[in-house]
Image 1 (cartoon, protein in one colour):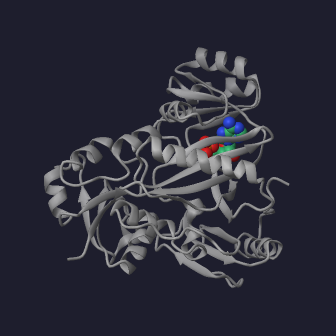
Image 2 (image 1 turned 90 degrees about the horizontal axis):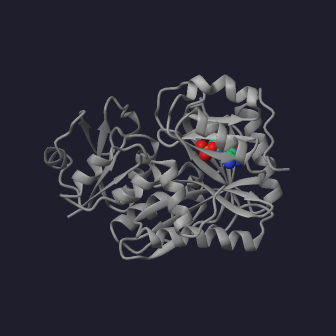
Image 3 (image 1 turned 90 degrees about the vertical axis):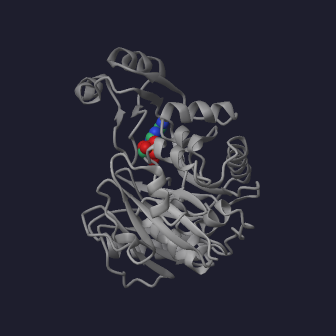
Length: 374
Ligand code: AMP
């Protein structure tokens, strides 16, 4: 009998997971939350709409009694995850998802595992925010503890006047105030751990964001510092072990002159790991499925430099030569992630030039330089 996997969420991550899973002979069923659009996963398995208060037993049955349930979303209701655990394993574990859903809890968990983060203070009102910024200095980042991702519910503050201006917007939202750190690059690593504890990590990727949205991921990080690289890999392996984590975990970091600081975790397959689809022997999607089904993990090695370029608001394949295009089947909207392109090249400098060429075709109006840190 085929293994059946339930996935909470119906976006492009669920789509790519299912596409990769089909090659492993797996069957899928998807839970659509609220009014979630399901076009990305059409034809890839059963789609079950969960209402406001889904009955977990009925939901599990409607999914076709999967062997394991996972999520492609971070904002998944914890009650639902926990309730589904009565029927089958849910990976990543709800406790791990809970930690990453709350910025303060996440930072405290990182510190507990001995992993450094940017200096921060928690704050719950205007007075506490002012006090935190007086202590940490400018620039500072105010980040809501919950529902803050892709730059949402997040403010960079460079001056007292600016703080005054956005005070009303923040209100009394529980938040963390973070010191702005002078990073030289933003990087991320994808790690994966199976139910029986086998662990692997992918090459560190350098990420270029535009307006809070990822535009390019490049792996392995060019001109890397091996000691920093080892340290970051060790941080991720430590977390996977300390949390008894199962599945893929993404760790986003700042590289600073004094070392690597972890900025954020994502308990799922991650956009900065899309390069592994075609760029590594086994993709993050396939390895996530192997991990949650407790199958032996696949090789994460990439044998030539890879770059992933997001198609933001674009859903037609570019003409610039490339090694793969994934279009997600979503309805177009400006700035929306509608697909991505993979470039592979033995020669790192040539890969950079090809990325520039692709960016010039996709975004002719912008002046994006790949070397964001240069
Ligand atoms: P985040 O939502 O935490 O990923 O932050 C979005 C972006 O804001 C990051 O990718 C950074 O470019 C920037 N940022 C966030 N926190 C800091 C910080 N403490 N210091 C400097 N830049 C930051």
